[in-house]
Image (cartoon, rainbow, N blue to C red; front, top):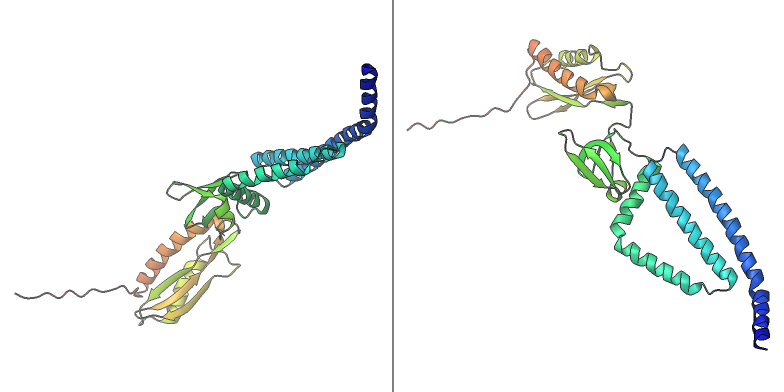
Length: 270
């Protein structure tokens, strides 16, 4: 009789839970297949977007395990296991980890934003967070720059993505802004012609957009001219130094004074 009792109990369990188990197995097979297809699609999309390899793998793993956890919760609910408390435990654990790693998560999110929107790339010269340098690495949590005097600068991605970034390498062309001051006795037209000649004769200065020379201010001790040539981004500093030097020589040769502060020394006789 006891054996028969357990046989009857087994039949009842099969009748009660058999269909649910079969449905759960079916959900697992179909869900795993869907997750696999979804991950392949996301991976292809990242490859087309030229995502960083380390970031791509990291995101794929996060997405894979998130989807699998969701699938397991769905299967447990199908079988009849109460998932409310299970989900609450996961949520609490996630909240605790999130609070503990708040700064790191902000930097991680910032790194993702930098990868998606691409305001900067390797090799760009940028100014951000009160510093400037050439971008060498964009990592998951930080971005590494090299300053002009060869210092390594590390900026957290959270701060970098949430603040202003000046990217000096983003455009093909750049304008150089000079201000040259000459004495009040100088002839304005002659000065303009000399300044313009330094621009039009320089091989790195572009004709389009056209360079500009204009009297911009009558300062306390000088007439100030705005001198604005356009050059290719890669030629910026070469043109800057050449024009600065050639302009000084040209103004000196024409006898045009470049004012400078004068100091008066009073000698007290004993």
